[in-house]
Amino acid sequence: MDVIVAGDRAGLVKARHSLGIGPSGATLALVPTMGALHEGHRSLIRSAREQADHVAVSIFVNPLQFGPNEDFSRYPRTFDVDLEICADEGVSIVFAPSADDMYAKDRQVSVSAGQMGTIVEGAFRPGHFDGVLTVVLKLFNLVQPDIAVFGRKDAQQLAMIRRMVADLDVPVSVVGAPTVREADGLALSSRNRYLSPHERHTALALSRALFAGARGRTPAEILGQARAVLDAEPGVALDYLVLVDPATFTEAENGYQGEAVLAVAARVGATRLIDNVAITL
Ligand code: AMP
Image (cartoon, rainbow, N blue to C red; front, side, top):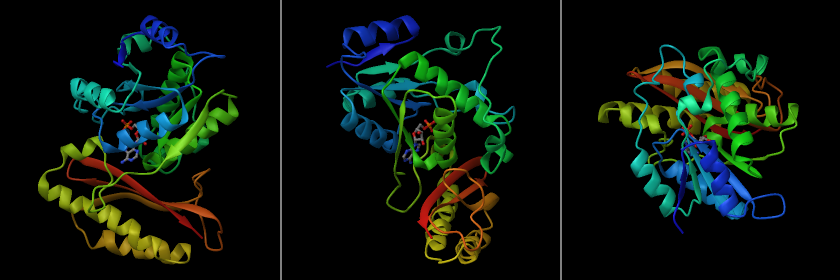
């Protein structure tokens, strides 16, 4: 079956109708993306397909979640290839609205990520999670999926979306999917295409550090072992390396027990990369 491309709200309503999606009809899973699709997005789509009758992929580079000095204007846009990937993966609907269609000129109301949106990644990207939650809630309202699949690669984003769904009683089940990596450990990211071959090699220190940290037994050991790898790579400008509770993103201190996330953000040349691994303490 061909992919239905919906460029605006009306197209989306028509697509849902023609596929029989609705309360007593077929189920729908949404995979929100900013396009420049890669193997990580493909694995989210496959997971979504296993859990619903139809999959919708949204492709929208959301201006609200980029800071003034970030890469909004140069973010990769590869719509034709993205469509081929979606067709190849059996996606039923691609929702690709314009910024004007998403945001009224006189819009006033948005979602606040609260205090949790100001820590860790949020401390380096003020307003980022407000922008993410605002667009995700709008996408949920427009697409009306039964479930939505997000990558654990963006662990704080996933935690914030779960928080929003709980706090605002949003009727969507949120599913987390594992991070897809290159054979050498580099987490796939649309931003990897900014890296020169030399920078790409330098960037491997991020996953190497996380894997080294994961071999530690206590928070101090985990952070120390990961830190040592990053310190040995002068091309990596570290923003943060933290061990946190995956639900709240507050620090897992010595004595912490249970699931934790070791998360890193760093700049390699002009490219900012994030990565994380789950660790059970
Ligand atoms: P993006 O297009 O970068 O906004 O990402 C769209 C979705 O894909 C988000 O839920 C990301 O967490 C997820 N994603 C990005 N990279 C990966 C990866 N390497 N493995 C799994 N999911 C990913």
